[in-house]
Length: 252
Image 1: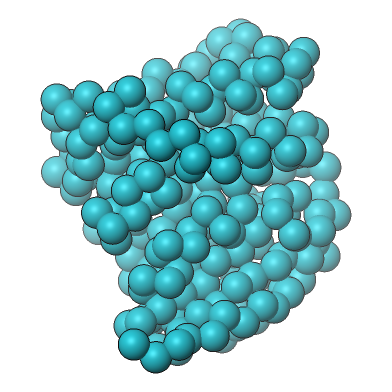
Image 2: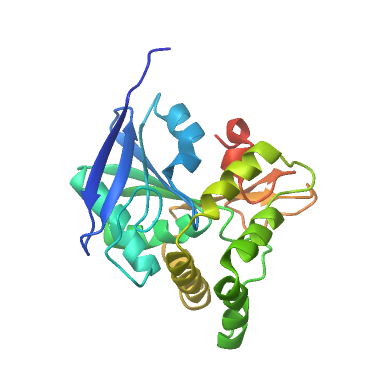
């Protein structure tokens, strides 16, 4: 197999935040990988290496994450969507599949609103039609976020550990993910968390309906006994939230 070189570039977003991108492969169809809350583009390394054989594989650091430089204080799902849309436009991508893990799935939908004519499909990874009970009311959202405001490191460590299935815990991968997440800027993380929860409450149903023909889902079934909650959802058994990282071959 021939070696495919990775190329790094920087794209300016709407608010002049500088978005670091990585591109591998060349093809008519581009797959754009969008990382989860407090993640970065390296979370998709196994997917970029695999899919760059047939597609143009693009991964990026959303503003305030990884190597991107942020100019914002409010991290809305729309602003993250603008980051991705600017990457698509400035790289002149014409046929795009968006793959978004967790919060990245929400960002993918916000991106599609901006450049719908360029989007062939959206893959949501463990974000839509899951069994996770998201807070709904204002008081529930405030209570959910409060521990992160009081002790970010402790709370994010606890949350991350809970996202791995007892049936499939790779401590090396878990520790690597945690090492990245725990170093995230708390201000960015808390703002993004709030906006994430707000989107789930106020926009999810309408937006999933709007893009129903383009969305497919890959979700975790941590016990292996869960049932799919939607016809366009594939379940991968015995894995937690970080499906692409823990079971990359199966996920791909």
